Length: 351
Image 1: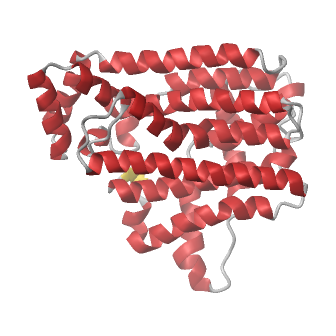
Image 2: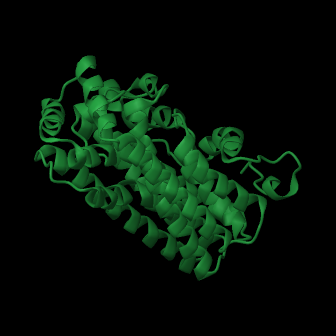
């Protein structure tokens, strides 16, 4: 591995913020992750499966999930070389989830490019998503640097993470399919915690601590930190889809309204709008509209209910409490500082 994450401890030029950490290491981590994508035994396997999958993964975003796995490993005094396969596995799961999610949502853009199912066709895109899921457990199971007990524990974490994410997706899609408008903020929090917080925060951090040899208190403390900050990450994602400045150039701006998603903003608005306004918001969410005027009207109704401020404040409170808890779990270190900075980035990021 070409990355020396011990620079976080030893170098005067180490990144001071989570955003700097992402900028400095995302490209390198992407190369490490992509090295686990194999080649086929027939040239057409590469043509129809491995090469387009590799191309898709190369447009991999900020790689925050593997990077927080490494940071957690360092924060408990571990050797990051032990975390390579786990970090790659989590990123391959993310790739698979995005491919399948875009198919389910009938999305058109992902990271500024046409979605994989539009470029390669529905059938091949489904198979590439399946490949990403296969790489999750297979990557860790074949790691010669992990002892069997650690390997089994990591695999159990990944299996549980996969189930929880699927449960959250089922709620998200099912509520929209059945035109459910009785969803409460508490229901949303269950869905978003399952759908996003486990695999975008809790499990990468817990696994990093496991392979780093952390104590049970550190492992569970980092897991809980990831649950809180991962939930805040999803709430911010929902907000960006509604009011983000750069989001429209990277994926479908306000397509959560078109798809009738029950975000925290939406469910809060449905509980707090007066009858006529509530009925109008339900009408807009049910119409699957793409008209800009309709989308603007839906956002205006959410603002009228105070729902955008409510969601933003909820996310900020989550991260504030989580940061205070983390300081009581980990000893002071540059890697702990990076993880604390992560919480702020999760709720302040612009894309």
